[in-house]
Length: 148
Image (cartoon, rainbow, N blue to C red; front, side, top):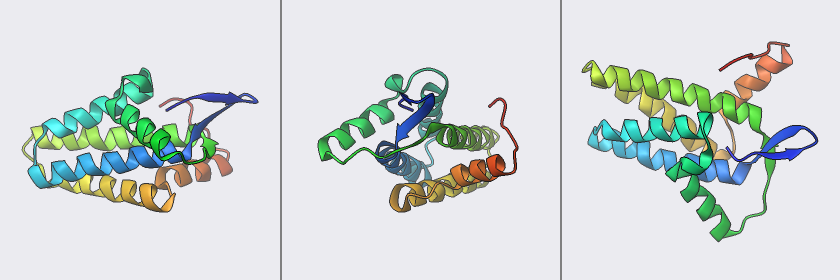
């Protein structure tokens, strides 16, 4: 996630995250149609580098940033904490799907990836992030996520 500091709050461009979600949908759809487990490794690499290293090592992030810059949409900033929480949930789903794939439970892996694909389609098209809303619900109930 790109980090821009404003008044001690980390913000991220919503348009860039929507473009990123769209590219993830393409990759996850490619997995669902080809059942090539290498695509799961690419997706996991993308999530790991964006969350734990730097987003500038993620090719999908770089492509989405490039697309947003070419289109020239006005930046719309949102809180990054909710997006980071959502990324951790996505990474967990992908790890479980990869584990299922390695255990020859392809139907389970397909179900998980299809579920995540639907989430990302809604995020990319309707500006609605399910995990972000769950994060906000936790926050409204004074439940703090200490570590992810």
